[in-house]
Length: 351
DNA sequence: AATGCGGGGGA
DNA sequence: TCCCCAGCATT
Image (cartoon, rainbow, N blue to C red; front, side, top):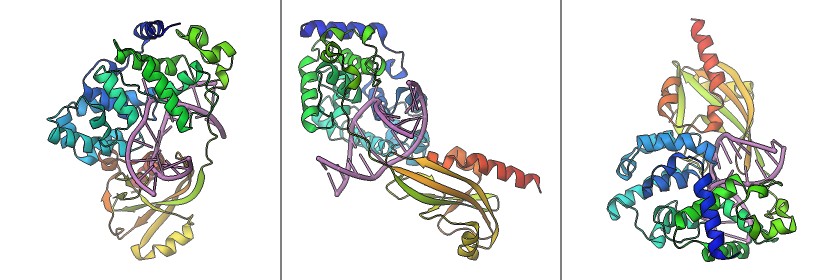
């Protein structure tokens, strides 16, 4: 099968089978960019609602460049990898100030912008600008590793280079946009990561070396995942006058989001009472014990509500309702909200 | 070359 | 549980 046939099979399949996704209705570089950033390491099903809300609130580059970081992070709340949002604002400011409000149609310049790496720069070049740049993501690694029956780990730089090279040679000059999206769409809906991809309905199964050898279920070869480090955490939700203490995090993890007071050991009710006695503790209540899993960590969390007379220094105090509406908290803290709500309702009924 | 950086869908 | 996801930045 020749290259032209491969391209037409893939592109025709894509045009007939592509999913109806919100970012496929708009073709502006801005909209494509927003979707590509959101889709980094994040599944389509998760992104859809975030994307729709984002575009509605920040429909233009100008709006994004001017938005308050807290507002932006609220739009991003729960999506994860929050540096993506911070970098998007940085890039928007640069685009407004240096590039007259529009993305330059140039790979190297795109690559230089915060949060845009080789994949996203190539994706924008091909999807937004319709230029033949090979955008290689997790889907494409899998599709090509199977097409070429690559039995070495796709983690190896040489293999990554090889796959990029294959796609660069294969990409359609006439329709780079649909070719790029088609290859990824195929990986997402047909050439699945499971042991049983849908080879029966694959438009390019005739050229697939892995399919010929019936080894598609074993590819691509990946490195075993690293074991997550476990960390003990105690989360104290300080409550004074029915308002709750939160603070903007300045740590690497969950940076710029708001959070409750968190420390690196497991505390008991007794130790909390003695350690924070100077705040004039009125009550200490266990909210919940739970775990929260990050990419490389697992937090084992003990969360308590600590009712005090004096406020905790350097924290801002807001009502639970205000926090939920206006402040962006990571999921690890939001998991406490049901218990928090329950407790606050109960104590107000008691009055 | 390896690690940090979130969270959830789906088997 | 585990794997994977339209990756990037830093070291």
